[in-house]
Amino acid sequence: MKILVITGELSGDLYAYLLVKKLRELLPSLHFIGIGGPRLRSLDVDILFSAEPLSLVGIPDFSRLKRYLFVLNRIKDILRKRQVDLVLLVDFPGFNLRIAKFAKGLGYPVVYFVAPQVWAWYRRRINLLRKYVDLLYVVLPFEEEFFKSHGVRAKYFGHPLLDVVKPHLSAELFYEVYGLKENVPVISFFPGSRESEVARHIPIFLEVYRRLKEKNIEVQGLMVKALGLKESPLWEEARRAFKVLESIQYDVLKHSDLAVLASGTITLEAGLIGTPSVVVYSLPPLVYHLAKRLVKVPFISLPNLILQKAIYPEIIVEREGLKGLAKVVEELLFDEEKRGEMKEALARLPIEVGPPGAIWRIAEDFITFIELFKHQSRPLTD
Image (cartoon, rainbow, N blue to C red; front, side, top):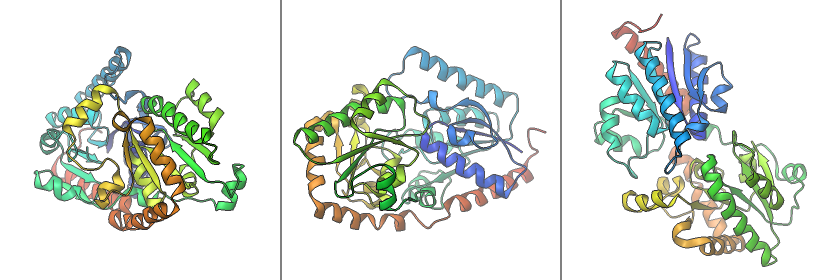
């Protein structure tokens, strides 16, 4: 059986990688083609297009929009020509919901993994999921009931990150390898996984760190560069202020006294590790003004949403400004008691998103879905 798999974000690429890898272990005859990032490319998947250039936030320029539409039409051609049997969509709702609608119109079974956050905003997408998705695997504990109440066939088996977020280095080895002083606080900055996010957040984080240094606060700064991001003058500028590290975010989180996080999956990863953090939200002006009117939830970061408690301070830069962000960071850096309270509150998080083994359970259920499909209709490809 040939499966079209599509993802477009770094976190979605991780989830797609984990699921495809486990499906292959359980059913080696499965063949995958589609769109993916660096992790999915590392598997024996026939990658037609790279996911990284397809992410659109705010108003895209003409060249990015042209590329996006070209890839969308190419995928539609594949579906028209019956080159696959089943469609597996992972996160990336702006693109994937268009594909879901098109594929369902041609009679394909459609499975969606990692739901669009319609409970927060853009609720009209619920109708698309109900009409065009046969099975939705959700990864947040409150999502299954929410989607079922809206007529979407949803299943929750736990969060895959629980099996992934595992630091490896001891504190002593971490400090030694990266040339850090054990008696000086470490503050780490995570500017995001999209090029557009990084372009917004690096200047903000550099300014926050500069303000700390201007006050002669002794602190060691690290910045983490997400997998797949291109080099740029911004990263060169960051390296003049920070140690910039790659592919080691869990150890950085584990051994940071405080982390400053661009809002996204990294907030859940930090929460699972128990890292005291400040969550930063910065958007292009138009998107920010739309979000102000449309967002329907009290929190931005996943730990706060899941635990329904304001554990991580959430700073919207367009509202609080750089001064507000720098003030919160400085206060937390010096408030050991408050950081301890954060760690204590976050200890509940792994229990809430557990138990471990979510990918295994999702893969087993997915194979059951495949078997049911095979018995109900003849596969579309040879």
